[in-house]
Length: 355
Image 1 (tube, rainbow, N blue to C red):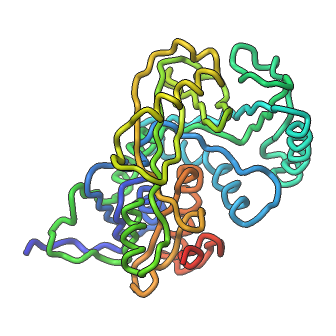
Image 2: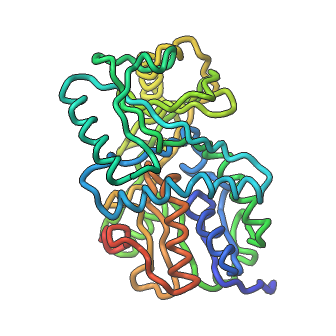
Image 3: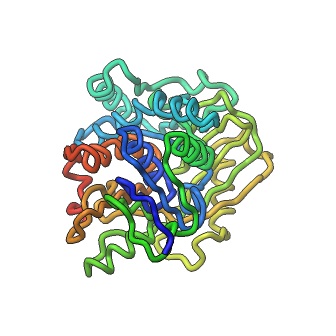
């Protein structure tokens, strides 16, 4: 048997939660090995949309406060990843626009503006603005008004995962693609399972109850340079301009599906809605159609913490639609627990919340 070097932490899964957790543990001085069966970002983390958008600033709770902290730390976090890796992550905090359909929507948006002023303080704004303030980009609005928040940011998922992997290697993390260095050797140290929707299915089987599932999403990438524009949220779609002259559109939410990585007519419908919601995209060429399955925990929040009944094993999963926005702070909380034996997890994120 080949001798396998012992490490303090083994991370299973090379998606956003696994990579961020490996990085956070390595920064604390832990010896880390990350094992990914297929490729970095092979699952839903290899998507194309990358909308880092906040919850509405009302009915405040621990989940929303945690997300706010993660979004606010994102600029410095991704700048460090770019510095260490020498690679772009596509991060840019350019805000987001949302059309307001009627007077009730305007009234609610203004109330939320007051909530943002109180909860976000001077770190970001949620405002009602004139659509004409954003010529040639504002989505159609029946009231002529939009919500403009300055907290939303973009990130290129694939580039971010590759940059994270490179930064981890630079910090001494061993990354193994395929399986453990010796298939007969057990994982070493604390083991973190960040294995996406397939991991949620395995956990459900192990515990004998459903704790989460996979939700398929389809998205489209267009060739259109709006790199200096805010992202849009209109007709239930995220329309995200990236810095490389593309615009990503996403996504569907499919509970039932047969082919997890295949696009179909729902992708065509998505594109038609996007062109209507953002007329400048009307003739933009389609560069890519993408499909993948996102891990959705039963609680709809990230699932973090010890694996019940399996000492020394931990779960970092369930990012669903907010994984990239939550991952930096979620990984810090996992490193607190694993490396420093400090529990800083919000109650709503604990594995037990989905049992």
